[in-house]
Length: 72
Length: 260
Image 1: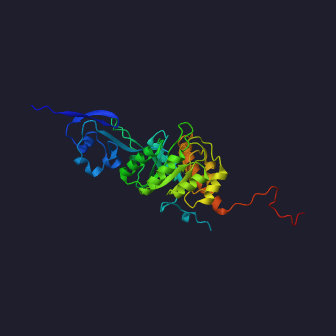
Image 2: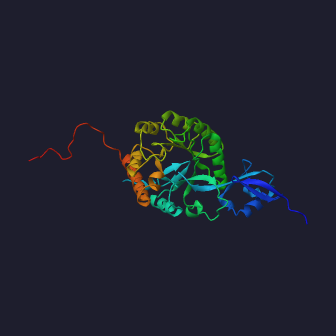
């Protein structure tokens, strides 16, 4: 049996192990993020939410997912 | 005949009936926050941009309580201490759903929370070029306010006093000078403590006030929200009515003629 290879990425400051070659869309589904309420950065660059299924994740990628919270 | 309905607040070509903008921070719960907003009559609320809590997905979301289709969200850059951080935050805010009207706030000191005006000015220029409509939190400094205006700001938002201090307007003269020199919306942001502070701001000729702590941290936030709503209306009405001149001596209200 072929062993599934995993890579480590950082999502909102936390290290997470994901399957190699997975894309951003799969990751976001996995963490159950409502796309219409967030913005996403990959390695400090804003990601076009329409293109997330085309973005492959690499080892040590840094992902930031932000939303609106209460503030003055 | 006074027609306050036609007296709208216009920011970046958008009309608002309410001149009170409220913050959504520091409330005990989202429900409390949403109710206070409704009572305040505010049509614009400030919101912060922060990381999604990946581990606790059940955490309530602001958008589930305050509908961005009904209330205008004004994303802020609270917690940013330089232009780079502020720009990053607002670009992300725009990405969430096309928000172009933003509140720029670049702080310079963690204790007094005064704005770093050099970084603020730099950021305003960049944001305006990128098509943002920028409402700028700033010092009550007429020269800086002018520079912000020349850099493409859409609203000037000088502080009354340090953020969250509740001290009320400390420098009325400066606010009046800024009022005289600018046609941009002038909104008092930060430092108000009670409803009458909002009335004073409006009587000085400001176009609106932005309040968070004074409502959220009042013993009775709902009542205070209502008090601020009325205070802003009263202040605006008073300003538009043209106050009497101040004189040193008394001037009796009843006629002297016909005294028995």
